[in-house]
Image 1 (cartoon, rainbow, N blue to C red):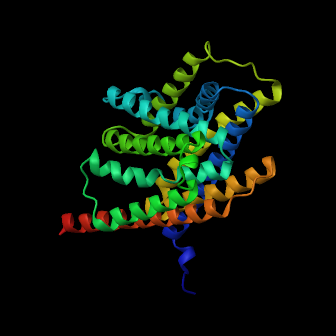
Image 2 (spheres, one colour):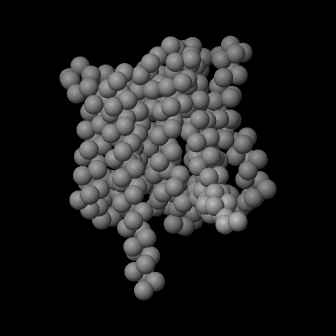
Image 3 (cartoon, one colour):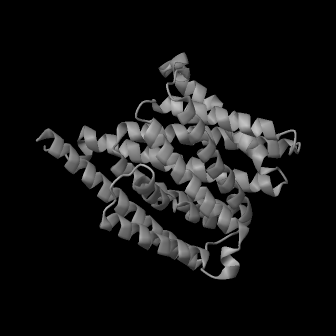
Amino acid sequence: MAATASDRPDAQRIGLGIAYRVGAMACMAAMFAGVKWTAGQGIPVLEIVFFRNAFAFIPLAIYILPTTGLRVLKTRRPLGHLARAVVGLTGMVCGFFAASLLPLTESTAISFAAPLFMTALSALILKEKVGKHRWGAVAVGFVGVLIMVRPSPTEFANVGVLFGLAGALGAAGAMIAIREIGRTEPGPTIVFYFTLAGMLFGLASLPFAWVTPEPFTLAILVVMGLLGGVGQLLLTQALKVAPVAAVAPFDYTQLIWATGFGFLIWGDLPRPATIAGALVVAASGVYILYRETRQLRQARRDAAA
């Protein structure tokens, strides 16, 4: 009997990669639900940043110690890690503020603008060639963002929306930094130093903005940190077993998880404009990924010729 596509090892690995990616998005959505809930209990955002990174070290250590061990500390790019930490933590703080101020589905949908910002930044900072197709997709994607945030002066003045857009821009900058230092630094080292920087940054803020959480809130903070670490590991594993083009489109499943958490915890239902805009942004992001992957394959064929 002939083997079906699902029986082939490549198809099985892609299926596993997709499962890892969807699991990562579930962890991230649950983490942001924890951010929103604990912020609603009066926990300062910078304190939440501390718990997010401090307890993420537990799953990271379980992964790193048997694989890379102390080699994870070795780096030739300390300033590169510092730049990645500054940009990434700016995005994290802004994203956490957005989650605390907006409905969970809306803050998640706005975060989808990150790949659009990344495409623009890759042309401006890395001097990568971005063709008219990708620029067109970026323009369409930003139309989707406008649909979500309702382009009126009062809505753009919404602090939560501004934090959401700043968080997406910070996430895009972090991706650019990772792309740059990733040429010489292994993934576990990048994750380790970013998590360490996040923990120290949050720790330094505690004397100025500390609220002692009651036991249940403390448990949520701890679980939130663990989920952040597990989600990061699942993202890494997804890219180890499957091509980015196969798994990255499943990042948008985070919106499904966020909608579920938002409804179950706060009774929120997404506005039609949020869903419509998110679909436009997701479609443009997938198209940008398709064009980048196509160009990469062509470059490899040209190099092999």
